[in-house]
Length: 441
View 1 (spheres, rainbow, N blue to C red):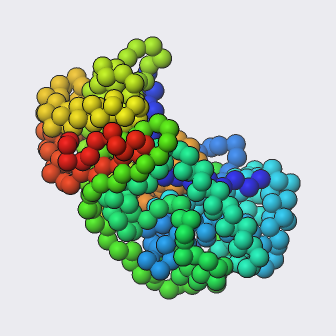
View 2 (view 1 turned 45 degrees about the horizontal axis):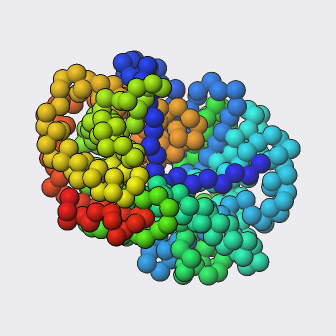
View 3 (view 1 turned 90 degrees about the horizontal axis):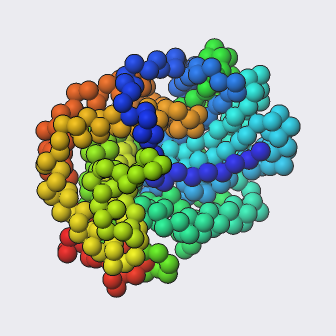
């Protein structure tokens, strides 16, 4: 089975009954890291799952695109599992289905991830398929037409989801290039041939750019297979992506249907103390209700209940060298206008009056958010693969959760003050004649 998926932003729902648990005491899955003879880093995670997975995580997300090849990462993702030098696309799919496995490709702003999920004994087959994607894809001109169709389909599907559009636009406004590059190829893209995609693949498929991540697999076997299958990988050191710089600004997109508004600020890089503090701030503000009955007690939840006709959620996205923190509002244009101003006032004033009880609740929820990121096979692979590629080490879940035990109320207040000093990033989608402008907030 082939499955193509894409990540842009996540709004995770914590379970209220779990908020008080101490996740620092959760025993992490054993993680083993080895540098293979091929020069590729190999990571295995033993989570005692009944099925296994393996992924090739490449530092080839949309942020590494240059001005001349913007959108090419999306095309490279969709070339995955097409014809290779040894197998046709049909055969790749048929063999995976015969073994009951799943093949998928996923693009983020920093990584391109090819993965396979399968029964324990089928690791050799699926890692070989993934290595063929990297080294033996033919990039046939006739297949480019089909790839472009799939790229257009995914872009159009994304454009039908307002939350995706606004978050993508917010990144473009906040960072312009690099992290500001869209996950979805534009309809007027400069990528017009398979040769451009192949050239990009040759640039990013190098040993320093690749990490192999396996779950519930034998580590020695995984390293041995990597030595064999990735033996001829290039060792060229890739050029370092342009360091992210936050700008801020405003984007207004006229569209039919419901209206949406994003208020964003300069965040922090993932894995830093500042990012952990922002996770606590996000948990404190949290506009979502986590009980089946009840209106919610967080500031944004109370604001949503008071103003009606609006939904409010907060987000905190962290990357290797930057981040974006903000609030997403949806509803009627007039309600959004009032809500956006109320959110602005909340950030300016109420955050400085956080109670000890609310702070402890926010800490517990932030721990949950962090622990939940290690729950699924896909999120664990993306998270750990990215950590290896960008920092050279794996951050154990216990360490990530323990970070919150050192945060104080003053840290949260100071971070909120720092947020408001950055130039706001705002995105208005829908009835832009009624939705607020940045300067009225």
